[in-house]
Image (cartoon, rainbow, N blue to C red; front, side):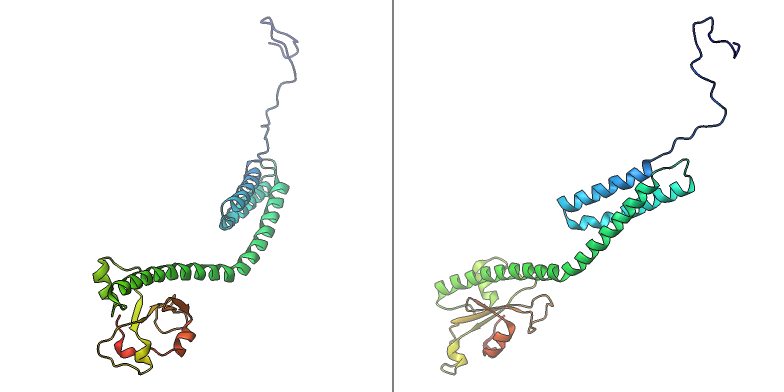
Length: 232
């Protein structure tokens, strides 16, 4: 039909000038908005689940940097440069704050971890103590060794947190003080010991129970133990 005509025999009408031949480009905001959504997701996950999710901030930084690069290289095709740069700045600032907090929290975290390990070990020592007391109630004295205790219980004994067997010493204060002889020993005292985190006996981190009371390694060193009647 003639371009100058205003309508057509079929009933169609012109509603505007014909489109030009030049392509029309629409800016894409997807990359910038993806960075914003990632920031919101990481922040929510860190607050709801665990603060270690904040490590995913590296993904947010990469996404925001990518959106900025796309907007710089093709400003007609990609928008949201300011949004991406603001997201990047907020993420970097928050990461610096979180990193400083994490560094300050590390000693506290390690101490809490040691406390949990020690608590688990002490709980198992108390379990073994209950078996020793039951043995003494039936036999009149503590067993000469943990092997003797296992023969009575018929079960494997608990270990410490690091899955190492406890050291056991049957002893008697009468022998330590020289008021009795070594023959015909009745063990009225005992010591249970865990090697602790370093898994080496005789060091400062040993976890020790003597006669139902937990004592430190330094306190244990001040109290004599008759080594020649020790059974493990």
